[in-house]
Image 1 (cartoon, rainbow, N blue to C red):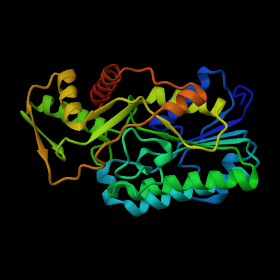
Image 2 (cartoon, helix red, strand yellow):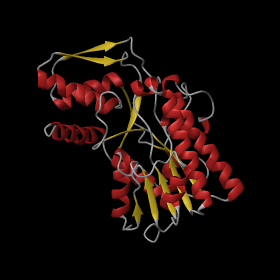
Image 3 (cartoon, rainbow, N blue to C red):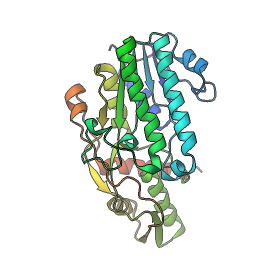
Length: 311
């Protein structure tokens, strides 16, 4: 797809991932980018979905109601409804408005709880997601079914991507809804600032996760929008797996924290392991993550420290 000559709408463009996707599009010479804001465009309403997709060539759907384990436990109904309704109606609106292509970004939470590692896309339907984030994961996975059905019946060119856990500047550091890396960075920094010698962490530290730097994720999404034309889902990741305990110790070292960590095993661990097979992305549209993990963590820590100093 010729992105430079396309009229593009990016939902969720003001969010963590969205602003990086917009930057990536600008870097590739794209000028005609619409960025509907949630205050003016509620994508849970069909008329709003129709309005934002009218006259567009490409839709990149990033808007989501999302958070960590705490939010998933607190508001599973909201997370299911909001994410399902936004995606279903936006895809239908793209069909009605004859959009040339729509890229929908799903979630690693869609994979079954006990998926063999590394996660391969063909294993996506081999079980139920981990219970604490299943409503969100199932809502997103339903959009893959819709895209494939619409391709077969209506010829809609829909692409579905599965990024692993993201991190980086502009992430959500709110302790009520943040994911693991920003949550740990904030906890550790607060302990440093207060001179505390112990930090309590949810779970027992054994689960493993893979993390993708947000700028790399944005590059993968835009590259897929430009090149990939298939109906099969595609993972976006870097293949680096680390336990929560190892991650915590790595952050402590990078941030200069010399205290102890206690593990609150009354809190849920979440999915036991997460690590993606990324061959499809590499073979089908040439995407490989470039940012080293320690480098990305350093940038994320620097971002939070700069933000904290302005609070």
